[in-house]
Length: 82
Image 1 (cartoon, one colour):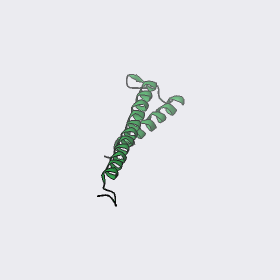
Image 2 (tube, helix red, strand yellow):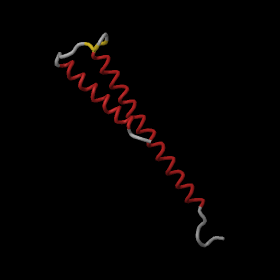
Image 3 (tube, helix red, strand yellow):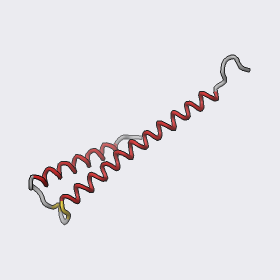
Image 4 (tube, one colour):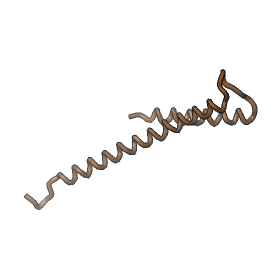
């Protein structure tokens, strides 16, 4: 499992921030038929979604791996019995 999705999310959030700065300086008002605010919000939302989804999935996999290790340790025969 690669971290490419998270890095794309960070790139989208950075692009949204750059668009916001450009809009604040009155350098750009629209990108094609869309206002810059709409594009910046969309990029930012998708970026945050990608980053948090990647982090949550990685956390879930870590919890599953930890639970498997605990289960394997409890199934192992202990010394002194049997």
